[in-house]
Length: 369
Image 1 (cartoon, rainbow, N blue to C red):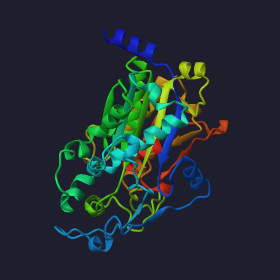
Image 2: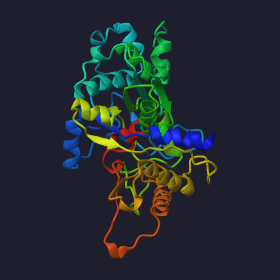
Image 3: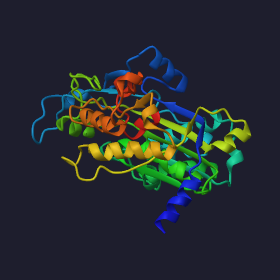
Image 4: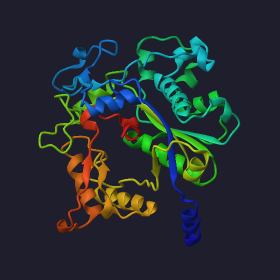
């Protein structure tokens, strides 16, 4: 039975094309601005804006029981408070109760479809799936602390499941609709699930991505006290001076469809995904520590599924958080996956590290890369 399952999985593992994309990232309202910022090495990291919270109230040396952290910087996305409720046929009162992450993902999904040349109305009633990755949700806490009135929209407004379900509802999409919460890997797992949905025949087109907003100080304090965040506001991936990561925010959505269908339709194809895989680190040194063996196994599995030779890898985009614990383990895992390399053949594998420029977007980090 197991061999039959593997044979069936292999038969269904066709390549998937990326035919549309959209995003809003630190210092960039859209993909074009994002690319421009990357090319000119624009640094979007700033002190926490006053319209989020007063970072001075929470700044200082960490003391047990005190809400203090030396991390006071982040990479913030623009215009996250702007939302045309009427365009989406949503009442203003309901929109106010919606987590801004839900609103942003809805907007980005529409923009991604537009980029793919797909009219939203043309998808109504079709097997189109939606997979949204998230990591954290500050909005419920901030609403409570602000004394926002409770209403009938609060439940659906702050529930993580609504992030994906809102898109399916707005467009009358009949494929699977799931919000994925796996912390930093959220958007990548969402894309992995979308690929599976296409390959299983559950959907003909898939929307997948992730969203992350920094709306309150609680996690800044918690992560800062845990030593995860950089006091200097710099994410120095693979650097001897690495002292933690910088939290960032944004949203990204890609439109996926089988490569064969995309080619037949004459779609513009941004890239092709030939294989993906997922696992868990299992038992490691600590609950938040990576596992070298699990990471190397995952990399090899993904490349095997793609039918590619890992020895031919020219560039690998890394997680690269800039933490003294995580970075060495990741590099060790990649070395183990790559195996012995013969330097005489001139082959090199470069490592990319987007977090050095836009910080760590947590639930949206993967789709940004």
